[in-house]
Amino acid sequence: MDDLLPLADAIAARLKARGETIAVAESSTGGLIAAALLAVPGASAYFLGGAVAYTRQAKRLLLGIDDAALGQFRSATEPHALLLARHARAQFAATWGLAETGAAGPSGNRYGDPAGHTCLAIAGPAERAVTLATGSSDRIANMRAFAAAAFELLAAALKTQ
Image (cartoon, rainbow, N blue to C red; front, top):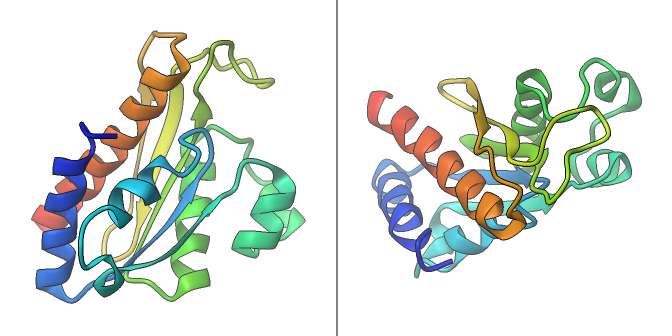
C-alpha cells in the first residue's frame, strides 16, 4: 500500500482544501482504495464511507442499488462503474463517488473479461469512466494498479473542477 499513499495524500489535500467529501464503492480492489484514503491523517474531514461491493447482494445492501438498476449493465463495464459511483455518492451524501469493478486475477471473470481488466468511475461535479487493462494475471499487482488508476482518475477531475 505504500505506493498508494502519496496519491491518496494528494487527493486528501485537494478534498480538504475544497471542503469536499468522498465515498467509495470497490469490488476487486477489496478496500484498498478506502484503506489508502483512511491512512492519511485527518481523513474524517473528507472520507464519509465506503463499501466493498463484491457481490450483487452487497451492491443491494450496502449501496442501495435495486435489481432493476443492477440488471441494466453487466459488472466490469464503464456504465456499471458509473452506477456504483453514483450510488456511493448518494448513499453517503458525498461530493464525490469513486468506484471500481473488475477482475484482479489470476483468472478472468465470468463475463469473459481477462485478469487485469477493470472499469473505474467518478461521480460528482464531473463524471468520468475509464477502462484499464494491465495484461497481468498477478492479483495483488492488479489490485494496486486498479487503486492507483482510480486515484489518478479522481485527481484529474479535481484539477479541472
